[in-house]
Length: 493
Ligand code: NAD
Image (cartoon, rainbow, N blue to C red; front, side, top):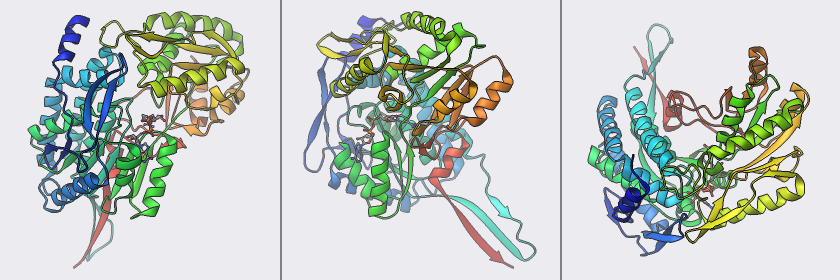
């Protein structure tokens, strides 16, 4: 296993790409602007990155449009596109340590996660979508003799993709893999906190044989680069993962410009329902995972724990014990399971929620903010018990390692509390009673229910939400729907 000292030495010599990637090459921003990207583990500047503004977005969209219109990628057969994307998956696998290191340095996730989950996950998702694309058949409608009515799936054109910082490489991949597999061109705007892995990915895509202009990566800020992409008249669809507030802005941008399709994956406040008959030990281990993995910076984090009152105290004790398996520390240390939060302003926000929680409920574990290596972005596992369902910490997305525990007395009450959220991304259910598990699953108003596990996820199954968690689905065969139009061609004969 690579040691902390070895990771530090690799980090010191790591190549950091910091230009805009347009038309197959790195370049400066038209206005020459740059912004610093900071390592939240030690508050040190990693590099300064070219900062895209509207002029650069115009250039990137024009490049993507040229590439789409001349067919250099859109005109290739699915099998040809598959070959390139499989090559990209292989290149990602060869470069797992570098890609993982870029995400860890940029946003603080533990290297033990970025090397085993994020970077290999990116390779897997590209491979899965590549392998699927030449196995999807078009349709012929039963239009009767003398008619041939073909229903064909065609790429939309230029896709704008705007992604967050919590899984920088994987969120980009979830959009790029199906968008590119279906023959579109893409302009990707990574989050300003974490642009580095997407820039390396673009370079690897070119090395794999993706023609110039098909994938453009434009780091920059939301209010200028993101907004310009959202308002651009020549973008056919905008796919977004991020906060509900910004997701709504994209619907406005589409309405104010060319009515581009907008697909949103937004916030969550996912409930984890623990019934009295559950395997409480297993449920406690996984409940800890559900709120502490990626320091709780997960859209589908199980941030509300609803537990049957008869086991409330016993379960909470087990849960507190389970947090011991989540040491916080230097994200480059392979033993670390929780790194710093992404940036100071976000840590301030999470700390403010903890202060709110102290007035709303009973703090039973954690709640402290720590400083190490010059960074005060470290917040450990924090658990509030006896949280009223309408408390702010039970309703609002905190996006940190802060869990709200609420007791319930009946299955109906558990469901009412679980569903009383503006969000509907995911939920977990713990019970040994299969009938209860399925009945409760039926009634949970969410995109994914995990029974006797938390946050189940795979390339094979759709991921996304209902209500203000968004619409449309990433992953699985269904993800292709966002990137294609159905085109009908009638032939009379
Ligand atoms: P964010 O909404 O602040 O930023 C996301 C992206 O939008 C970034 O690239 C940002 O630059 C851009 N952006 C910000 N303001 C903009 C504006 N005015 N116009 C255009 N673009 C703008 O979200 P974040 O803080 O980066 O990420 C955390 C959020 O993402 C959480 O709410 C989380 O639940 C959500 N998320 C959802 C999913 C999902 O699949 N549902 C997955 C991961 C994260």
